[in-house]
Image (cartoon, rainbow, N blue to C red; front, side, top):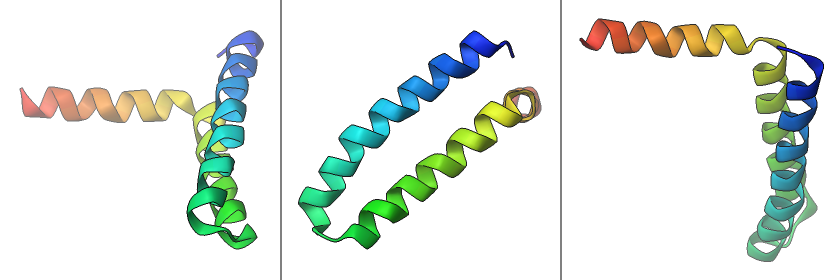
Length: 67
């Protein structure tokens, strides 16, 4: 994956972090819930940016098995 695509994905996750954090804050009203959400979102970003081929290949394998 090239650098520009990684930066684009990071920006999309950044928007989700800002909007989602506000939403979680409105629902829960605690910083622990917000930081938990951000930790999960950050983990998903790292997994996707560092190894996207594995995620795509596993989904392709599942589709091939189902056929």
